[in-house]
Image 1 (cartoon, rainbow, N blue to C red):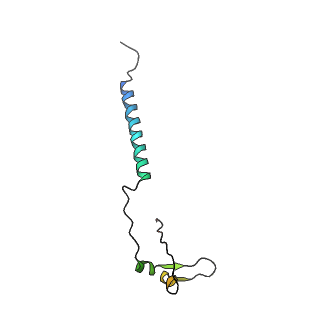
Image 2: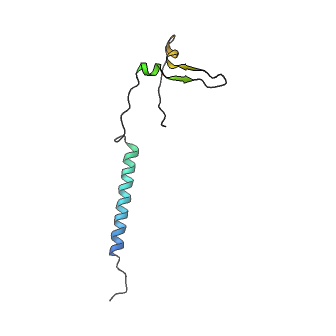
Image 3: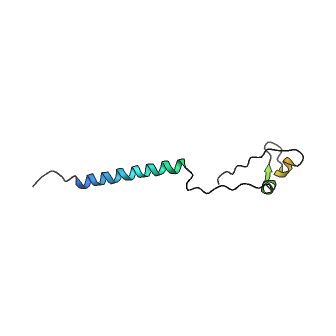
Length: 84
């Protein structure tokens, strides 16, 4: 009869936790640095961009359609969609 505890179960549990942590870390790194599971973005059409309502910043509040920006002169447009 031995008074030393059996470390076999403890060792197996530590290996399971260790391998799970490594797997979670690898999965997190892959998901954070790739776009494998993200949906592909759609390209905005000119008609869609023309209908967007814009608001001015500052003391004079004015709302207008984005198409007014390039009716008389050309314009470079960058559309960014914020999440939420």
